[in-house]
Length: 133
Image 1 (spheres, rainbow, N blue to C red):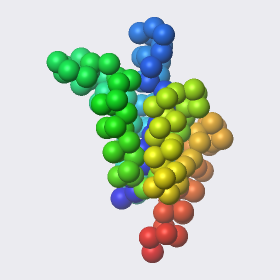
Image 2: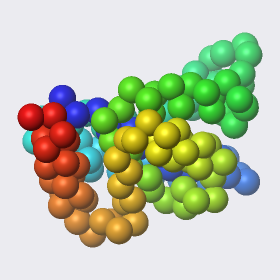
Image 3: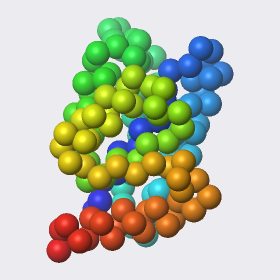
Image 4: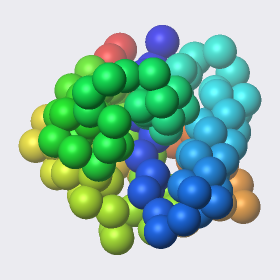
């Protein structure tokens, strides 16, 4: 199973903007999993962060250090990372990208593949197989 971390902005100026960011990340994650032919498990922190923030008594702000460190830990466990949306404007995404680069985890940028996510997924699978077989 190839583990793919999906990174995209979470924070926004309005609750509607946050929801739009969550929806984008979840939809991208679903597209990757659908195209993965059972070989890929893609996940994003957006739904986990959103749900936990509402229930936790501490660390309610999703952009604090706690969540950055949690995201970076998950990146380190992944075989590949896909960056979507305006990731370059997001502190969290930039930290996740730095972490992936440091661990030499392959990076993929959804904006280059938006019209053909299955082709990007095939590339992720091919690259993983070439390193692990």
